[in-house]
Image 1 (cartoon, rainbow over the protein chains, first blue to last red):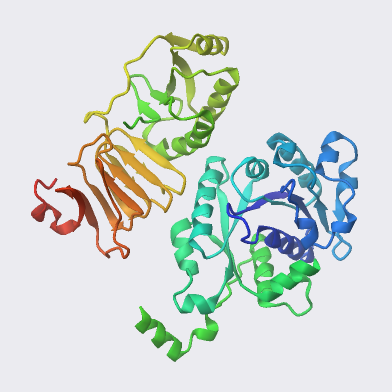
Image 2: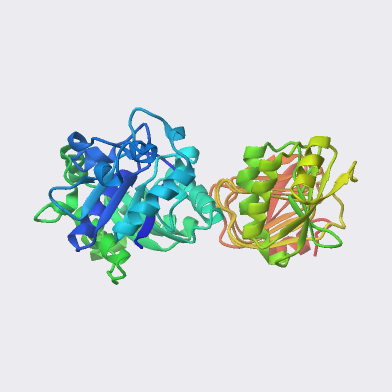
Length: 265
Length: 225
């Protein structure tokens, strides 16, 4: 049986779908088979980020209705044959599917794949409940902003109440420069509130936007960018490897930088 | 008036479903509440569901049974004032108490609620006595108590002591960085920069004031120490 992991955040736009796409790619490159499940019914995006939008024929709903087999609905990635996407329906809304049906689909996928990653929609309503229903573990994505952190905190409570105890944190879109100038929450600030183990840090980078628009996850690049390395590291940590966290402050850790920080406190 | 959701009774636990909370809200609140309070009841305690005027159908009762089962608690009795609920409960095999129960009132006799857990965003702890929390109250979290509130951790959410109007109550925290403090009818914001030492909030005149914890007993008139 594969591991079923939900990627969630509470707040929208913090990078759940980007994280799902990149982690899926990174894990397949490490030789694992991965199924990505889009739980964002009515607002699906995962197919775009993977560049698979023109190959979607059936969706999860057709599988449930018995109109097609699971294999037919799965979109296999040509670049990475170990990766498959189970698309959500775009013409319906969150109530088109129930938590029990999500559990059924995820269980079917977990039999065939090493990992099932569920891309959770924003919010804590029915779409969220559907997405976490089958999950055994959760990756919580947040950005270093008070609004995102507060929402993430709420989600931790809901996940724990649902019985998901294995929750790890991904802090996305960090700008080390702004953290240095005390204009952005640091990772330590975020962790102080959420108090859950850290799965990884991802720096803010324009290349993330470019890769999103092209439909080519960052981890596919020949020369990995910093965020690409970050996602790769998270995938390795999921596999149980001990990988040190990226030191995003390294360029600022000079004597002058330290003195400046000391006096700005 | 604060009404607890879970309260010990002679035989086991009372699960109180306050009529002012709608079902959906309760569905969210109860699992969190049980997890937070699990240190002060023992598994397999018999539970009496106090439904009062609320209508519970078979589905509602099934949901409650499932939630409690996860905590290894068993519903034995359902108290109700509504015939439909009584019928549903009897069909589900629970013993039924019909008629009014004495409303749960706040009193000094209510035992203090001792919690070892973080109160995260969206969680609201209500208790008719004093609340002692070992852990943080995060932004968006809330504690409402008729008695005092002691937070052995960072208080960054909202705390309301003396919720029944008692202005003699105090709020204590190792780090007082609350979004808002309320004592009785008084409301105050905590200072933007929290002090590095533990503080105590109490009402003086018509305002909530903060004292360093080590001076509180000496300087506060009628201090609790």
